[in-house]
Image 1 (cartoon, helix red, strand yellow):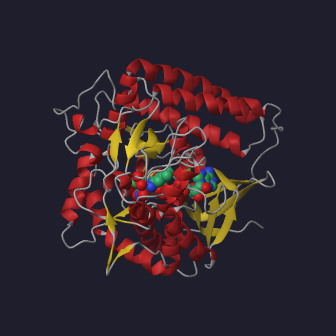
Image 2 (cartoon, helix red, strand yellow; image 1 turned 180 degrees about the vertical axis):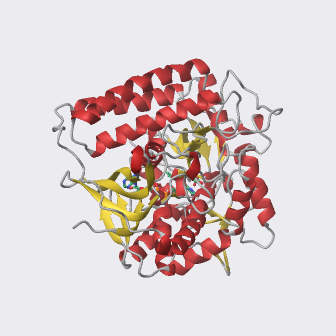
Image 3 (spheres, rainbow, N blue to C red; image 1 turned 120 degrees about the horizontal axis):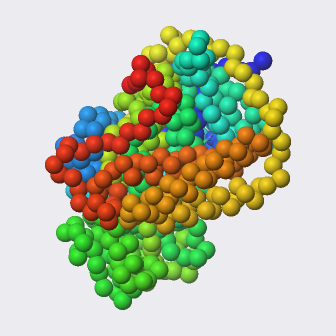
Length: 536
Ligand code: FAD
Ligand code: SIN
């Protein structure tokens, strides 16, 4: 007999673990399963560096945090969502401290660092490895809780109740692939929450771990949810440039603490692009670096923090210092070579303030969701905050509703009767590489209609090839991720083509200006199986 759950959480990053723990605080008897496609620790949360934005200093104000968030979001943030999030930041931080997260102190108070787009020091942190402190603490709490953890399980697709006449009802579970055995099983549940992170691995160069393949966005889209603002892929300006460093971030806090961006000849350039210099919002800094690199034909620019003492660097940035030194670069003595890389998916599955999606019983929290917080460009350190606030609000909503959500019906077994083992794994590897390369070349920091059309054509061919492959061969983790990445690439390209202006992170040479006449619009894509009756 298959176990049935009150809630299945897909993803074990900051959002998923917060949701599970918060729900157990409110409903200690809730039966929760957490699916993680790798080890419990693996996800972007583990690698987060700078910290979490929250108004914690008496000289700061929620109004100021709201204004900075709206400013970075370039006219597309939902003001109610921003206010909702910012007002709950302190409670989220207090909760993390109560779980055991040790943030850096400055005497009697917490040390707050500064990042681009913030007009105050308001980023609470644990040296330069805030994500690790948060992830490991929450993992410990979850392991000690009653939640059942399924590591090495890829969620494949959501299961919706079948009503009469081919109509689909609420979400009643998810199919998952056990990577160790290769078997697929159903996880029936009263409710499912997607907490599966973003899709930045759709690009060749990314700060994200390998698993950021947009699985939740693709699953929700296939299940009938609307998806919003997918054109706003955030590129972090400063990823370490070294042939052996795969995707190591140099935190924005380095610029917050005085780091300067330099051309290869040692001259500063950010003041020529924005009055805020190195502390301009990320979209502006990443585009400026891209411009310098293209003009000079250089492979990277440099980030110089060597004017700070070694002691200062060792106490504020121990992780960055050690990693750079491992690659033969000493930030205390020389500038760090850096390049921009895909970092954050601002768009995602459309939700309300409780994380509810268009499909009844299905929630989305964290980077997978489009809550309206980030608009056209996320403000630094607002993402871990979003995980905390929406993990808690989804838990509160679920705690109220669980009693009235019916137990899931028996779900059909996964049908593998017509598939065989693949003898062409090379096709999957080749398509992965091709997809990520043309997304980088054609749908990157600076776009054009011609390049987007090219990408659209390539994505269409890939989608057809992958659909054929998917229908013929047994699923593997690589195939599932490729299928999801191609779908997300399609959503990004379609959204980018639909926006006939440049705004926030979306910059196209064919429409270089921001439309200041028409009201700013979100790009909302509607799937064929969307049912307006259930719209949030
Ligand atoms: P993640 O932490 O990415 O977790 C996703 C989870 O979903 C993982 O457990 C993964 O295994 C699982 N998963 C995915 N697909 C499936 C599937 N099909 N089946 C089962 N499980 C699945 N933000 C800040 O606010 N401050 C920072 O300082 C900061 N620094 C960052 C530094 C780096 C290098 C990176 C990459 C990001 C940083 N961010 C930062 C962004 C922030 O870390 C992420 O947006 C946030 O952690 C996302 O949390 P999440 O829980 O939504 O997803
Ligand atoms: C960083 O430390 O630069 C990342 C911060 C973020 O992505 O919010």
